[in-house]
Structure formats: C-alpha cells, structure tokens
Length: 161
Image 1 (cartoon, helix red, strand yellow):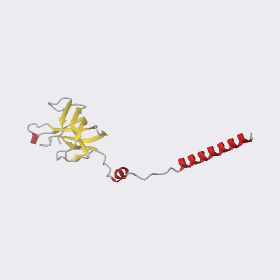
Image 2 (cartoon, rainbow, N blue to C red):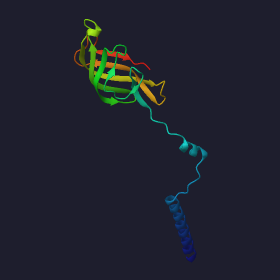
Image 3 (cartoon, rainbow, N blue to C red):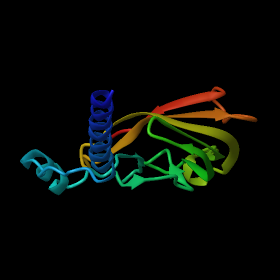
C-alpha cells in the first residue's frame, strides 16, 4: 500500500510541476527574434489609402465640391449648391441645381435657368497623375422637376482624365 501512496505522490508532484511550467509559459510567452522579413515589413512605408475624386475642368482633383462646371468650354452649364449624401470608392450622390444657359437669342445674351437635380458620379478609374487616387469617369443627372429644353429627364456625361 505504501508503494501505491509514493507512486501517487510522485505522479501528483509531476502533474503540479507540469501545470506550473505551462502556466508560466502562458503568462509570459517567450519572444523569438524578429525575422528579416518582419523587420522589412515594419520599416516599409505604409500605403496611403486610395481616395476617389472628381476632376474639374483644369484636371484638379475635387472631393465633394459645392459647385462643378459641366460645360468647360463656355461655362453654359454648371452644378451649384451641391449637398453630398454619399462619397464612396465606387460612387457619389448629391442633390443640387443645374444652372443652364438657355442661349436665347444667343448664348452671350442668354439667361441661366435653375433645374433641381440629383447627381451621381461613378465608374472610378485609376488616376494617371496620382497613383494614390482614383477618379470618377461618369456623371449622371436626374432632373427632379423640369429639365432644360432638348434634355431628357436623365442626362449622362463622360468625365475625362
């Protein structure tokens, strides 16, 4: 019987010792030296998040502009009072006014008329001048009341790079 008690005591002590070692390992893990790959990753410059912009008539990037000229050549159509409800990586949405010159009797003597619109920008592409940004390449107007003469309720325009 004494032999069994000694064996039980030795087994118990071994289990306690093992549990103590395991508990210490969990509480204070041993750190290994960092690999060259890890050091290189930590010292590499972080990538700037890509931003999505719309390019104005002078190819300048704009984010949530309040105004935007549609007719770059003569300025006879422009968006004003833009209120952006969304500006994301894939699309942007705003409400505002499309001010369009009626060109009557001719454009220099015409009158600008206001048309409420919903504006949607989409189809982003990588920018040629700024590798950290993309720019929208399509603009769609939805006239929410009346539309200018010769326009439909929806007008879509390509935006260049």
